[in-house]
Image (cartoon, rainbow, N blue to C red; front, side):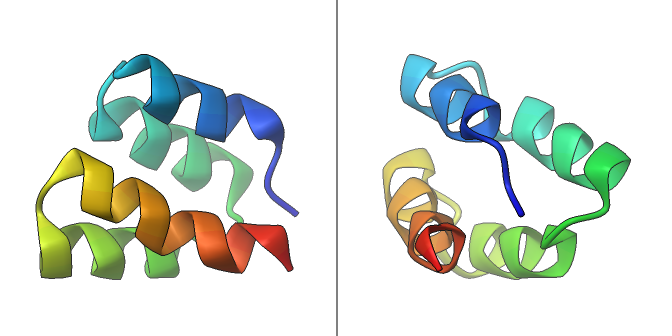
Amino acid sequence: MVTRRHWRTVERGGGLATVLENHRTGGCGQGTVLEDRRTFGSADRTKSAFSQPGRR
């Protein structure tokens, strides 16, 4: 499961790097986030992209 802290960091504009590191530390859904980031590259689109699987 992904904690809300990750989403808050993205919304604040703290940077994807912080979110990616948090996911690596937690070991949850890191592959999905990395793939989405590579595909879109823009913070806003990536936020929407990995916020969908996070809702499950």
